[in-house]
Length: 337
Image (tube, rainbow, N blue to C red; front, top):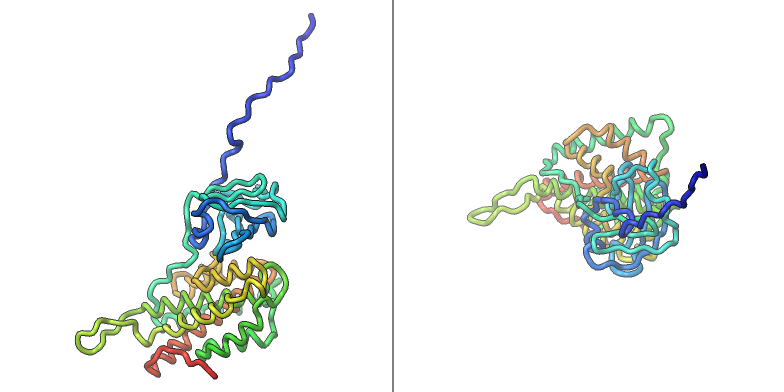
């Protein structure tokens, strides 16, 4: 008996191939993802993240696509996959991509945004006494974590400019803060130089913590005037974040990496990565700082320590400006000649 061997009949391909992966996008990316699709370029690919730079248009210019177990940047689309699943293995650095219509496409990767997340954490109203306690707990947690095995300081440890920047912010000296900040924009190696990481932590904490203290309560004026934000609050910190952020982002696109420039814009607007947001919630008294601080310090080679340095400087400055306003009766920082 002769066996009959037949060639297998190929099944027809499913229309459109595999369905796009589901993603959760930062609200900061709506200007990129809501309009029709535009061209982008893959500027970096890692096991847990890839970065796309738009060909043109305003900030945000860089979009991150990250795994669910990666550092969640304020400009990220998070996919439902871990780094062990290698969701970006088909994407080539330097390749073309498309962003828009609620989708991200790069080589074999297709992501459809199914939901949104807010990169600005809700801290609630924060009284100055609670902020002082939060700053002390953050200082203690950072000291304990940095003394642990295998931990190193930030990329600009020992550099005088971050210290000068922190001092100028605490004094409400805008001109001094701008001068020190401009000296560290783009300072350091990598996709996010240390100087930019410090500035991101500083700017986002000035804005978010300052805003939380500013909305602590309203103080009624004499007569029938409506209530106004208390001058004891950190109006000066938010004011400082506005002007310092405007100064460092004005030409960041030509002074640092594309990714770092976008992150500076995000921080100026109050956009924080998930690890930074968790630390700020600790400062606001919502949870103990130990675990959140360790997770932040684990980000990158020095990025976590640099971000932590900036966050602490911003929280200290907000506290100092709040105390100054309560004694002087005026919230406006001084502008040195």
